Image (cartoon, rainbow, N blue to C red; front, side, top):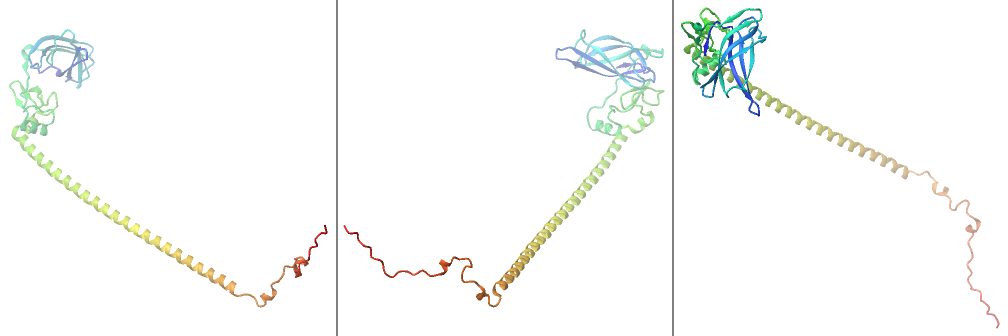
Length: 297
């Protein structure tokens, strides 16, 4: 990617989207590297297919952007009259600021700003783990620029990266191969110690939880035993009290029936007081049956 390092804006990425009808839209993302608001941007876009082969170059011109300083902004590119592309390279030619300032590229100052990205592997894993997820290459000193671990080319007069803000001296000191591998191994050891400590803490917590469960279970069992004992005591006491009351009542009733007052038999009446007199006198039963006279015919 050709770039003038003094450019106040930087192309970051492109995303191509298509609807169900096949119509495509491309979204170009830039970063405003200055504190000033960008109002207008001119650029040349090289369209690439999936294999990185150029499909043509198109000029771009955007106005009234309102791109705030030190922030990203996205521009839309309609693909109605463009070939179907998958990627793009953008060379910014002119930037106009909202306060009236301008920047224009210098063709003599253009340089290839393509970083030497690390291939996937242990070194890439170590670099990302130590430097951060945006790290893609080793820091490098070029004749006209220095390359940050994030892949940004910076002027030699810049003491911090224009993209990520990393300090140049610390970047070259901390992110060399040997330093990164040592830091990565130390990080792994700390991670292993931390994981072991977490496992031990989890095991201890599990033991404490199990102990509390066993204690709670024993308490519930003991409480159930005490409730059963109280229930049996209450039942037995109720039975004993009931049996005692029954015996007392039986004794009282037996005493009342057996102890009558003297002369009670003579006082009892032998006849009903209001019975008719005829019932009191015995009726004479005839001993002979009267003869029935037969009628004389």
